[in-house]
Image 1 (tube, rainbow, N blue to C red):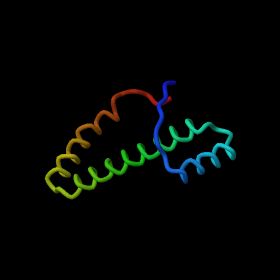
Image 2 (image 1 turned 135 degrees about the horizontal axis):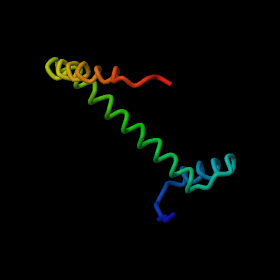
Image 3 (image 1 turned 120 degrees about the vertical axis):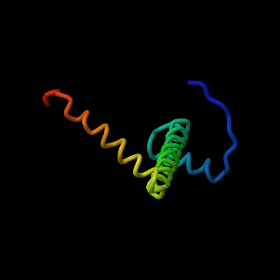
Image 4 (image 1 turned 45 degrees about the vertical axis):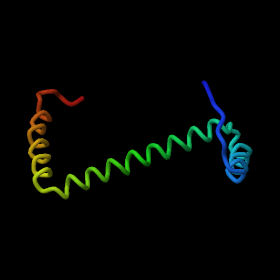
Length: 82
């Protein structure tokens, strides 16, 4: 895995050292995991905001509901449940 150097505050470095000591994981792994978690959180916040905006637009929400209804027929596509 390639890596690079970044600047962090002394406080953050100390927290990383504590996490490394208590988890046995590397600083790189902890930073990677933290960034991934923030990235996922941000993704879902944007997704939820977009969905809320859709629901607040009556015409767009009606079109969404109509599209869902159109796709519902695929649930009975003749495939047997296992």
